Amino acid sequence: MQIDFALLADHAEVVAGKLYLMGGGWDLRQAPRAPARAQFAVALGVRVGWEETNLPIALRLVLEDDDGGAVLSLDGQLQVGRPPHVPAGTSQLAQAVVVIDAELPSYGGYRVVVSARLPSGAEDTRTLPFRLVTSGAGGFSPGGGPQG
Image (cartoon, rainbow, N blue to C red):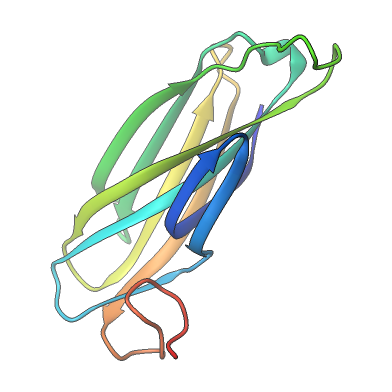
């Protein structure tokens, strides 16, 4: 099991096994003042090996500030089965979206730390850093995309 991808987006959803993103891949958010309410999505793709199917995979998502203090923590679980049309030995990509709605207490650096853990203790982690800056800095809109 490994995290194939994890990225920040303004909006994301998984429909019929496909990931749909709007405003994805940013690392800068703007706000006219801090603290600031931030709503965004974390899109995940977890590659699950054949021998790891039918096992619970614990997911943890932690939004941290630059000092490592937790702003928000979410726990969940993922389990992938063995569909009849998938040949034996084939890995599968499980996709998920987690919507974050949090108050960022101050301007500065933050990171979303995503981890996936099997019952055996095997774990994979991805870290997604971003910065909260005052409006007007860097020529980006509040959602993180270019202005214009």
